[in-house]
Length: 255
Image (tube, rainbow, N blue to C red):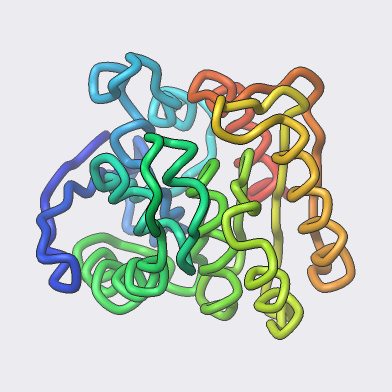
């Protein structure tokens, strides 16, 4: 079951669509359910909502899986606004690779994560029967980057996380320092994966693999239950993430 509504993000002066998946038994039980927050909400559930016509089809999978969780998808901003919001710090080189123009992108990730924690989460907890102590986050590419940053900033809130094909190259040195200064003791599970063929035309497969390897190297001694997977021939696409999503759910919510 999917519900959809708009919220205002005052810091961005924008309305944003929120898409909520509810388990099949939500209305026939009084249970409280774990919540998984995800980025790029318009790409999560229905093919017709996406530009490329390929979604993760999360509702379809969860309806059949037996896993009872609420998924909150936050639509991303348009164009470079997505990069601004998912970038914890500013980046001075990727804009030129994207559109040939020099300039700064990123730097709004802090505001975006604060919105989720201080405004969206309280609203979701009030509107739905949530297990407020079982809150997770997942994302891909830049969404994977902002997910790891959220874990660093709010490790006692987002206790289970998944970062797929993550753009950890965006702010390498600052991210490394943030990881090193974070206490991850409250993180229960962290899933990271990266394909061997993640070339986007802006960043090479080698660059994606290298930044995920160093992130794993820093995190493996800090997170007690970490799963790191190199996906042979894995590519950077919604279809690839759809195929990998069951692994994420099985790791985060399995026994």
